[in-house]
Length: 431
Image (tube, rainbow, N blue to C red; front, side, top):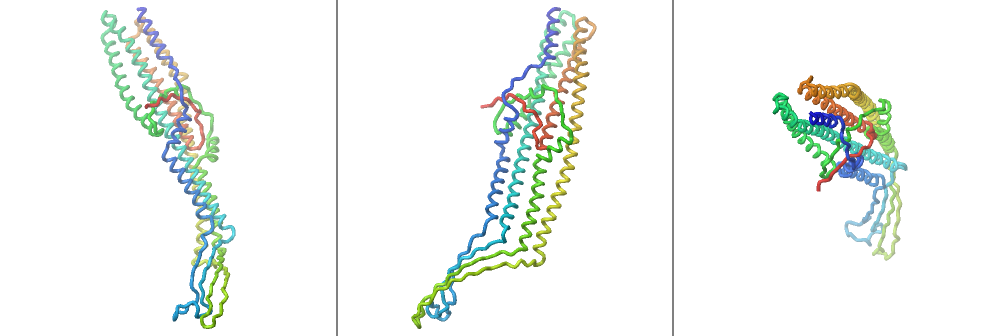
């Protein structure tokens, strides 16, 4: 009987005390690794480089034009020394836009660079969210596996005691069969969780682009809390969310495009110089002087068919469109943030209920069932039921924490702000 009491006491200690987790790498390090290795991130960086190259491509003067020609060559002789106006011509011309047009064009293409940079930032937040989702999914699977392992080890510890009691007719066969059934059922669940764990690890390895064996169950050991309001989150989003900042840049770009379109109503210029070399006339032997000519061309900005005013109107419509999009994004963001905060409030309420009443009640029920079984007033089935209930409630606590952290990862993406406290986890690399 002393041995039996010792086993039951060990069961209680085993269930109620969770082992400490060893920690080696932080979430921030893993996120940095995933971003560094992401092909999508590299493609967005390349797009930024392309946009930067377009600034130089479109905001500088066109190439000058070098011309070679023959002037006033007589068709009857094709000779250079018969007519005084015949000459060999070399010309050079350069076009110039109206002052300020090139700088205006540069500002438009600079906006493209800023848009590409916001796309890059958004991609980084997306990688972060995907990795965090996979990590917390893995954490709950590993935690469930640990709880099942603890339960199985406890039941296996209890198995020889119940078997001995059955053999000396102090316990019914039903107790032994019930214990064996629970152990078998745990093994089936562990096999199922093992498969899911492999899938989650494969996702994480794919995001990190390296094979890893990751123990992240320690991330769910602490209760969670949330101090920020909807206004706090909305202000963070307005300041940091890439899609909102991108739309603001597009609004500014449309204003710059309107300024650029207005330059179509101003003339462009073309400056040229021409040198004509003449030979001596055959008829008189007189050596003729060479000619040098200068010319200035001015384009006439005639608004044929309203094409120039249409270009200005287009930029104004784009400005209205981007402003409308911005307001729609803000409205959608408020809805999404509110929905997420409602989920967080629900999770925190459930966490508080579990911590203050249900888990404590289940723990006392488990203790009472053990005490009652010792005194013979409680059936062994009640002991198993109370143990199952306690494990289920612990499982639910961890699931709440997992759902909470995934919700925060979503809020990070929605606001473009780091909201999760950096935590350490253990990562073992496979060679």
